[in-house]
Length: 404
Image (tube, rainbow, N blue to C red):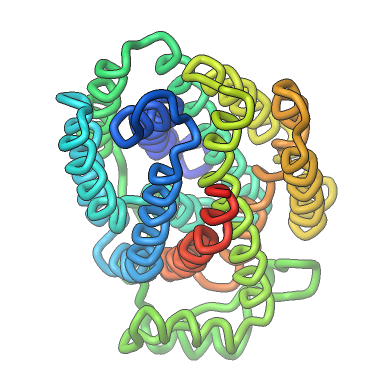
């Protein structure tokens, strides 16, 4: 199992610690923001909504540029090396709110969150997917993606559960400690490559010319959607990250389609993310405990679906049908939430949560088959960049609507 899914345990532990730290602050950040920016009992404070939207746009623009670059660098210098920087920077914002949460310190946190998240937001996920794609091959890759997503969801479950019972100050302090422990664990235990005998050139994303010529003559045989072969060495070393993305989009119709799906999925998810909690607070008066209860239910359903349902569905119906199923369930979920008429309705719609969690593992699984193991960082970086672009566009639509 060392070269299979069992060999991913250190990356899974790193993802768990990082996600646990990130999810801890979600149930409390809305109350902290409103308390710092809004006077009295104005739970529908539009300033908080617009600042959240601006933050999302700024972070999205930064990650849209940085993710393809980080993917390139991980192929060249190694995933473990590149992962160190974002995990270090992630410690800073929770330390600030762990110390004080008045208006001045909130704005310090706000600025530091934007600057650090331009590098940190989604980086662990991006590089973890690339790590799985490099080390896991064949039909078990989609299952590994599902397990990876499931571990993150379980981390969200524990993070939300802990946040529900901890005081707000201690919540941010524990979050910062978890980020630090994750950084140390990753540096000590994570192996760059599970296959010790694999050619170092493959590890850094370059191939010998004779290998490249041979690959161009005979494509690898593993199908992506029954009849589409894997492509290798699509990128050229001299290309920039943007040219990398354009090059693969031109040579792979399926990769282009995957990016289109990624954009619209990210656009809708980001709109829900920026508006959902404020909507519940303004319309139904949700507080920290109610947020935590709802998020706990969502993460329980999500973790079960990703760890047990997704791998079985993927092997039974294939990645394409799994993706379609996930998108349809997302549509039903958002349609019902948008007309919520009672506080229990958002709890009811958690039955559709698995759909949203099927989408990205399916997309990443499809896209990862378009290139060889030495270019997985670039592919996952491109996907993360498009996801970030969706996050940039969404607040321009959803923040004004939420403010109204």
